[in-house]
Image 1 (cartoon, rainbow, N blue to C red):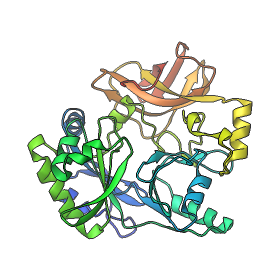
Image 2 (cartoon, rainbow, N blue to C red):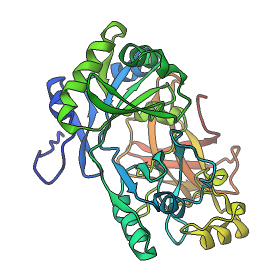
Image 3 (cartoon, helix red, strand yellow):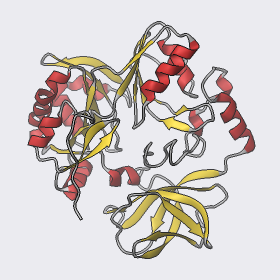
Image 4 (cartoon, rainbow, N blue to C red):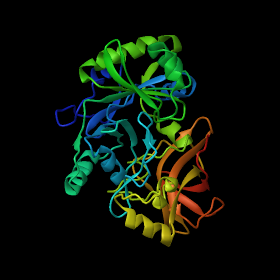
Length: 372
């Protein structure tokens, strides 16, 4: 059975959209109300390029929520349980965001560009609306908007070679999540040492959407000596690396989870004394004890092809959790996935299974990441 996506005005296009079409994109998904490439016709080759070479990804759907004004820092701190008091301009931070009940509603990278300007580089949800409402209800002097910013990722073990060819050797000195404002032949950018893979690289935050095709071509030409090619954030590599995906592994509407369950407990700084949304709920959850935990899973049997929905995790015919995403790992030569299970079930627990089209499959729990 084949499917197609209607390209209409109700879903936004990336500044790189035409360039990806010209380079042979074969599928799109929808993320933050935008089209995001799924693959370019050779998923196995794109996976290999990410692990052994260098890939370029249109990740413009990784939208920025800008907090601008005297209370930008105050609003940012209200939105996350992570203590931001020592965060410096130019150094990004991975921050969980929770609602008043302690449920995770996003896990963006926070980029402080100035004392009065902060970006939240968000996963798939309407955080701009949430931040705008919190700011207005608290009477804060801050403007919340979605600026004209569109990230393009360069990822893989040869990514920094390409980045140096584009920007010079200073780019190699950036620490993880550190960023710098610059330009490339007049194209305004923020260059960050980041990306949704463990293979290394940078993200180029384009600040002028009219320059999307031009920037795509410049990266493509600079990366040609290293065999750069287009691709998309890779589900197999992210599972192998134990990267958590808001939307796939947890989502407030369908897979609610709190930060302690998802392994973000070190970022819930209850002792720091700052005010933030969800504090009372998270204090209660910590005091009562966490009842579920995130885990890796190994799936027995023949190669799996993935899943379209979360899979109930069963033990003795009773549900004990769920597996959110599965894939076959070529590096490990086995089926792997990420799930959320009862906290009392250890890695040696027997009798666990999920149901796939061909019947039940035995499951083994294991620590994350699969590959460090």
